[in-house]
Length: 475
Image (cartoon, rainbow, N blue to C red):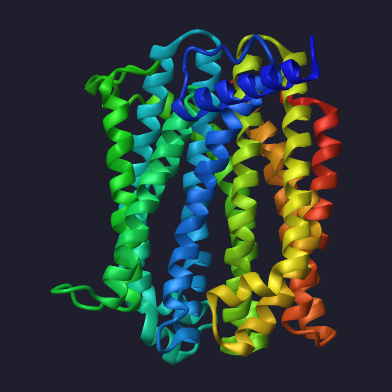
């Protein structure tokens, strides 16, 4: 076989796999066949899905960064996103539980049980968000002040916060239903829902922020309205496919009747999962507050700008690492432990390559990337410093994500919860505080604490992965 023929065969297989991944092929058995192909089929739509989730914050950041009071606007968006990480934590925790249970049932060849488990998770989501939405609407201004915003910034931006937290159900459902689809092996639907949501957000943002024809300019509030409407449309797309009956999951109205035994099982998995992400989120909230109090409005705006850009790059890596959760869940369900381990190593290798590439880009071109999102020189200077310091740990972030998803996909949610508690609350927060306050390094001390702590967390994850408790968990 000639070299040209080999190349043609490679590209032919690659594009066939790419097409299969983007289309969504639930007929593929992730418990058999090529592990590399399994990772690629799951990872491509998952990466694109997470890229779209990160685009929400960047689109808002771009448009509000060019408003008249841009430092107030950027700070409001950033601080609100920091608070929303608690809701993201709830959403990711429930999504992770749904993925673990649905994947395990699919691996056991029981799609009916998988569909019932997914619907019980949605019931829990409705109950939780009924409370969060009301609290967010009532205490929006107080939340911004508590986060370290100035009185002027809080007054300027609290309505943005009201809308974003008040629409938390859309955020929760977008994550949760996508988790159900990922557990079933159809990551393409999850990807497409985020694409649709983001396209709507990108179209609506300039219209609602700056006005268009008879539509008035809502300014910062317009960004919140655009994001909420975009996410709502994405959820409607998900719901349509849940009930269309064309996939492996066949949803019936009867599945929405509360099954407290199933809900208890889901909550048992989700509770530590939610806790692990709440622990991480509260750490990020503390860091945001520490930067705001030591660096002022411009320091806070610079940090939030860098953080949003960093998350734009990290979320696709999280999407890639999500492949490990589905593959581990389904292969443990099929009693194929060795295949589950190989899936973890393959996913980790791809994630390291991706994150190493991103690290080079952010270190070399960080200032140009930052310049695109803000024209405030003080904000820009701090943002560049923050981005370059935080990006030093990107390779360790990539490995850590795969390990977290491995534990969670297996249903071993307590291990990463413990790692996060010690890594974030007993190490990162004290380190950031000491560097920022005691050594008078201000925001720079906070920036340094982030990659140091993330590296320590990843090393702890490797230790517990090798102990192998995750292989023996029953869900």
